[in-house]
Amino acid sequence: MQIKNKLLRLKKIYIYFISYFLFIIFFSTTFLYANTFKVSDIKISEPFVLNFNKSKAIDNGFISAFFNLISMITTSDDRDKIKKTPLRELKRMIDSFTISNERFIDGVYFAKLEVTFDKKNVLLFLEKKNIFPSIPIRNKVLLVPILVDLEFDNIYLFTENIFYQQWNDKTQNYHLLDYLLPSEDLEDLIFIQKNYESIEDYDFKDLIKKYDLEDYIITIIFKNKSELKVLSKINLNNSFKIDNRTFKKTNLNNKENFEIILEKLKNIYENNWKKNNQINTSIKLPLTILISSKEYRKIQALEKTLNNLDLISNFHILKFDNENTLFRIIYNGSPKTFLNDMKKRNFDLVVENNIWIIK
Image (cartoon, rainbow, N blue to C red):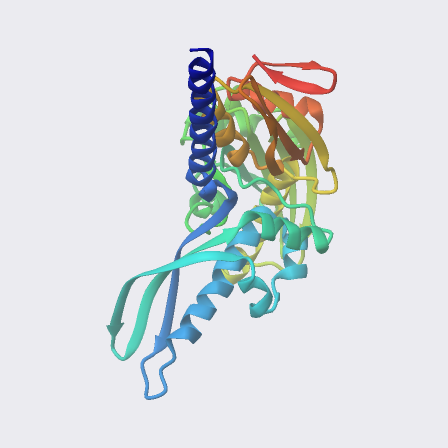
């Protein structure tokens, strides 16, 4: 009888571990795609001639997708360092791709391409280039563009302000900032005109508080003949900065000239946002997390969270038994940042003997 009971206990333990292994394997693969960067809606084309080569069109699509990706996760200066990355090298970072909406129009092949890049390989590539990438977080920001005409001693907020009228006319899918422009309120215009002499020092708080946005950019453009001076008051992610730029030999009536200035200003603001969200891959903080092996759903949620946290470069199961499971992670940030990240995702942790215990 004792032998029979022992066999039953062993059977239960065996079933438990088999179930646990299946559980871990299942949930490890379920969230695999969280470890990728996906770039969608890449348009490709190639003349359909005698020596038509579909692969050439796809390769060009890979280059466009890679440019879009690095434009989202690196600043413009860093992007320029790697935008000419050889096709063979960037292909090593591609996890998968799909082609859709293929068609032939007037002797030209058209299609749409979606490319999935392996996040780990991309971050490793950037680390070797000594480039700190950014977490690609989209953000809505209030933009208040004010045009000051020094020649005619006028100030424009809405009408006759080309920056207000055309700021959102041309956007790129890799831009992370979505701009909300103020509504055409005559009261705001009159108040700003009254403060014309001290416009550089004016805080715009009365205007900003009308909108339910914490992040804002005040852009004051001083126009004088063929020169523009731009003062930008940038408040992003509780970080306030002032940026001064001068654009010489400019003509706002020239569409190409205006679009160049607009793109440069957007790059400045994008760079500021990205710097607030940079991943310091030189920091490799090893952390050990302990969780009860019996809490299957919590383990599931933990794996999903670890897969989706951009500051986690790697994680694996260090040890487990029927009581506890230990995860080892490599975190590209500080312990305080890690704690905040986990709290946002409803994980309550305490630290005991250098082990982070999930309650």
